[in-house]
Amino acid sequence: MSINWRDDWSIGVYDIDSQHKELFRRINALLDACNQGRGNEEVASTINFLGTYVETHFRAEENLMLKNNYPDYKSHKEIHENFIKSFKELDGRFKTEGVKPYLIIETNRIVVNWLIAHIQNIDKKFGTYFKEKQSQLSFK
Ligand code: FEO
Image 1 (cartoon, rainbow, N blue to C red):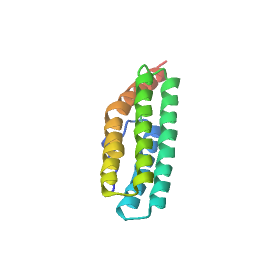
Image 2: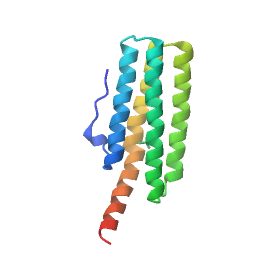
Image 3: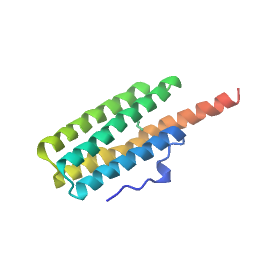
Image 4: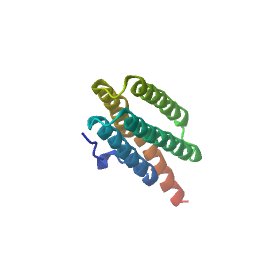
């Protein structure tokens, strides 16, 4: 099962949307590795590949918020930190328990469902703020 990007997930900020697409590409690589029964080592390396990018993306998004004096920066960053914690726990479980069907279900819940909901509810709020700010600047 692959996750196909949907245009209504777009938050309207080009760099962030591109990064979200890349996140889904990496999630798909992980789900494929799990579902195709590839070895623990390969799954571990796709989790790493995803985890590294998640952190890169969060930092880029947070920097853009800071630069634009986004009022919800702190709470948004906290949500990111909590996700990183859950992701690391999941990563640890893959390492100790190996690739198990229930861990694939957990990955869908913890990573896929979370990310879709986060983009649609939390990132979109920032997207709206950012676009408004840009349009105000262009009228000055
Ligand atoms: Fe795109 Fe707030 O993560």
